[in-house]
Amino acid sequence: MDDNVRFEFEGISTRWMSQDDSFIERIQTSNLNQYFIKEHILKEIEIKNLLDEGTIFLKSEKFAKAIECFDDVIFYDEQYAEALINKSHALFSQRHFVKALRYYRRAVSASEDLKDLEYHRLLLKKSGEERDNFPKLKRNIYAGDEYFAKGEYEKALKNYKKALANPSKLKEKILFKLLNKEATTYLKLNDFESALTCFNESLIALNNDYAYYGKGICEYELNIAGACESLGSAVKLKKAELLEKGLILNELGCYLQAFETFEFLLKNHFKQDEMYIKACSGLEFARGRLGLN
Image (cartoon, rainbow, N blue to C red; front, side, top):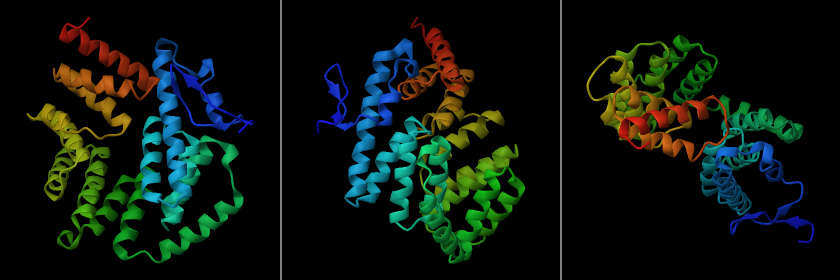
């Protein structure tokens, strides 16, 4: 314990950690948002403790709970390398080798220090074996995902359609996700009518936030009534989606919903990048329209 340290601020502290823990570098003054330094430090402590909690779950082989913690950390910071590599290990332990490889690559991209050639070789071997044993449905989905990631949207759409050839045979959990993938591909192709149809089908399969978000985007682009309501029903979204949601709500005059969206986003994003600037601008615009200045 003598070699470990614990960071404390206003009565809130991290768990004990080694003196070379990356958290120490994260909270250097130069890395903190000077406008909200108190809030930023407290959030960093909260996220650090969540990361440590996930690590404890990982060591005790409670992999699903570990992944929940790591996902929350990654929502806060998509480049949080420790959360990415730990999620890779948790997925590996669940025998999701293809996904584990993706998160390993993201972790190494975030921090070269996490390179592990032996683990990488094992991931390549295991993920290759997993792909070889994929059923036809899963092969089409993963092929679609890979084409989508490369920006080859027509090819991605073709594979998603193959996977959706017999929708009645798909479990609702798979069906709604696959319909969302197809719809998102249509969005990339600016085919908002087809995307809207898919998002509506996704909502019939299973009520889900992303489909409401996509539906709202399509309604906005097609100038169809209901965009505010659809977007307002979408809560559990990625940060980029929250930003887009807030910006559109402002354009549609739904200022209170926009204000709440930007406020939530800025409580989870302190890095002063383009997203931060747009969110701050959007918040101030909504605040002004609401007469809160």
